[in-house]
Amino acid sequence: MSDSLPPLPSLRDCGSADDLARRCAETLATAIDLALAERDRCQIALAGGSTPAATYRLLGQLHLPWERVDVILGDERWVPADDPASNARLLRETLMAEGPGAAACLHPVPTDLATPEQGAQAYAQTLAMLCPGSPPVLDLVLLGLGEDGHTASLFPGTAAARERQRTVTIGEGKGLPRITLTAPVLSAARQVVFLVSGAGKREALSRLLNPEEAIERTPARSVQPRTPPLVLADNAAVSR
Image (cartoon, rainbow, N blue to C red; front, side):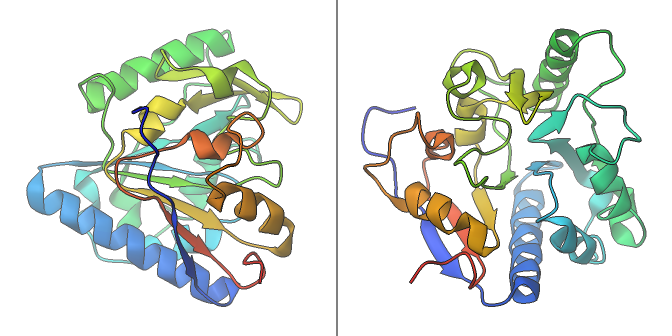
């Protein structure tokens, strides 16, 4: 990342939670279309958690060349693939449940390996295969925002949030080990979109948009792509 000031995120108030999901699905679809107009395949990293589920259901119904889209996870909890907390399971039950999105090429974190470290190493190899380069350049990254200012599994005060050499590392949050892409990889993406919903996210959103906010307190600010990140939020999250 450059020593110059990063571009400020661009905030869009999308209205209701339903409107936010539609706007986000349309934004992701446009980014996928644009990437596939320039390259044979498109690589996207998607967020987990409950917020993007409605977006993924809508996105999966859109008629895109999904067989040319590689889907990876921005982060994953170290749980079995069928665990309700699994982000890969979320994508299978939403984006890929039925309709055109079922043809997407999902590359889940191998949480069946012996240790999280082995899982992180294996996922780094997957990423390098899909996106050769240092750092690997994804076409699109969708991120969430936690009430504590974390994104992916880059939590305040953790080694994962400070990692600048590895592409994939081990995070720790809410009592679970997690596999996460690191800030340099997230920042190298051609387009970064934050999806923020709910009144509980107001303070964190304000911190994300504050150019003087410390990265240590709000690791989401460590994601600094060359072009301004797009922040899509609903009315409840946007502080007046």
